[in-house]
Length: 395
Image (cartoon, rainbow, N blue to C red; front, side, top):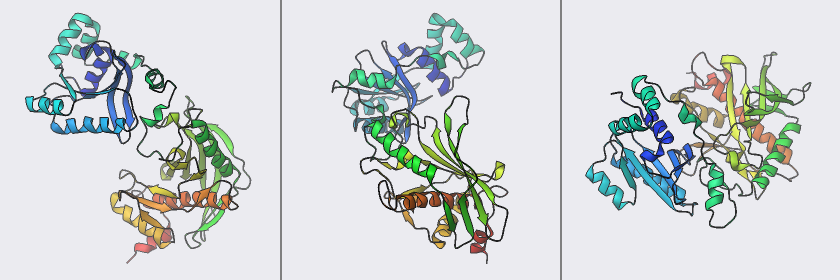
């Protein structure tokens, strides 16, 4: 008999949720819940929210802790009835007892049971999964109930309320308003300032000068066929000291798809800055999400940018060099409150102040500074080399 992957089992349960229990309505798959993703989310026949965590083989104690953590996070803001369920092929008596103690449901669904059920109820799917070893694409076609509709339907307040407060990314600003229109208004005011900003900054002790290209206007661009990436592109030029040939740079100001924060703004679109230095394989990029930094009520952005890097692009051995290089050239680096990351301190960024343009310029400079050091410290033969950074570590 074909051994099923966890993804295949998940697909089958989406197509046939009655294998779990009768009366389930699909709400979503792989929903973002702070720093985790839930496997499958259903509404049960009593309107309760059911979180299902699926394990391919044996359910372990750590899996119980995992779904307990999911439930704890969701209960911070979800006031309706909530169920959590672990599904696996083997759930030992000790794990069953632990689940009972923690009020977590469990169910053993073994591959043989799935095989026999499909043999009786859906032989076409059985053949495709067990004999042709193919994922059944029908799983992607299952229509899920919109989570927002579910929240509105089950709201104890009798009025709609946003799903963002439940399935939001861990990096969401705690100072976002529940009023998506207010969030959008503040974010778009900052966007408008950036579009109009005439930028000309000398950086890294005079080794770099970056200017907004004077002979170009912001241009509208739709980058993907589905329109998930669309916004304005602003052209900048980066000059390295003693080099007359500038490096072309682009600042993209627009949406980059869902990104786990679609309900943050009234129009359902995300709002990001994406800064690119260079072209092709040498290009280095930095993203800045407004949902992460927005302080809606005080009409401001957080006064820092979190420095996070991917070891695939920038070897971990170079991260401390990045922090040191920024500090050496006068950029203030501090630890985050949880000590898990480093923050590049920018200072106040507020609307309606006399020096608002200067403050927004400081934000753009910080993103350029970050991208420059990222470009320099990328893997060998990647990125762009800046000699003034190399000399910091020459013996």
